[in-house]
Length: 482
Ligand code: AMP
Ligand code: ZN
Image 1 (cartoon, helix red, strand yellow):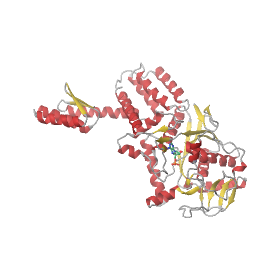
Image 2 (spheres, helix red, strand yellow):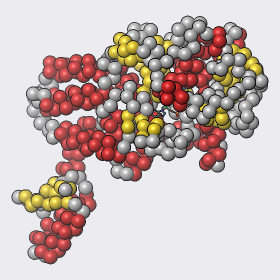
Image 3 (cartoon, rainbow, N blue to C red):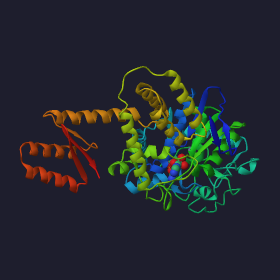
Image 4 (tube, helix red, strand yellow):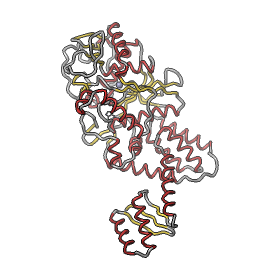
């Protein structure tokens, strides 16, 4: 696979420290609110990346944190803890908020076919490890205590700032709420590893430490969680592009200082989901969730399809019109797959291998998911039997996770059930899968059979008012929305 590496600013051949094994780390959610569909864009693309690597034959160890302490309102160590803000908003304890939104996050992930990582570690569960690493950094001379907090000393590094090819605007996101001067910092870029003093004394969760009762900074959490579960050499670190600075930059600084050798070889950053008014963000308070998409009648997987249609290194503009287009294309694709009903013959292994090879090359070119979708249409058009088509589609879907064959089977079942219900008196309704409309069409047929033409006409008018057109066909009726 070739993957763009934000640390080297190049597309490179993907390599791992241990052949055949990928140590992969993903920055998890800050659980003070629901994940919005922008956050979930990042998790969808990271999920496809993980599944693609597995498809290529790698053994992947995927680790993710849950940020339930230490992420302050500004990524630059100022403001109060986001978790505390969430707890106050909902008159609950921080741990109640953390549990509720962690569960909500994984529910959303399940609806979007995002696999749960092999290891999920809430930050509050690993405080001893953080204290150990912060102590190590002090011992090695990379950290200092000032004004009650422990800071990382960035002046000790030859090279602090690695992701300098991002837009200034993206980088600014990290310090969005105005950086207040912290007089304790020796250098402008120094950052907090452990807080015992902050302007917000009512921090809910605090632990004993050699530097007094306090709590960890957000950046140290990810470094420690990764070092514990991925080991000393990380192959691939993922996150949204807003995390590149300062979060990932600080992770590199402290991990390499602690370990004494290079830490993570490849950095994968997903660009933002934007609306007309800019980046979708939790802190702005106006954001879209998976539940809201469902309330509006969208299948969450239509959103996944929408995300896969564009490249992860480009900003993606969300609008209802764009989502409608994706939802329409997704449901047409499912219908075409549902029509592959022929069970004659065996899988054409040679043709299947060729199609898979193409898929590997296309998607393996910097995770080109839209080419992955094009490969699905190529399978539908290929001069092979339905058995082969279904087998290859299932194989590609182990990466894309659009539930293609499951949805197609459900559609076929639904159509068969409709035909069966209607078929009791020999009348078949075929439509666009809306039971309410099917029932009306059936009632109209029954009215006609009973020679109650006035009622039959009334129902036809009612359907017309709903934008539905019926065509009588031998043995039944077909309806469609116009
Ligand atoms: P958070 O829960 O705020 O810690 O963010 C969780 C993940 O979502 C991080 O990897 C962020 O970089 C990413 N993220 C935040 N906003 C967006 C957005 N609008 N589009 C894509 N990813 C985002
Ligand atoms: Zn992180």
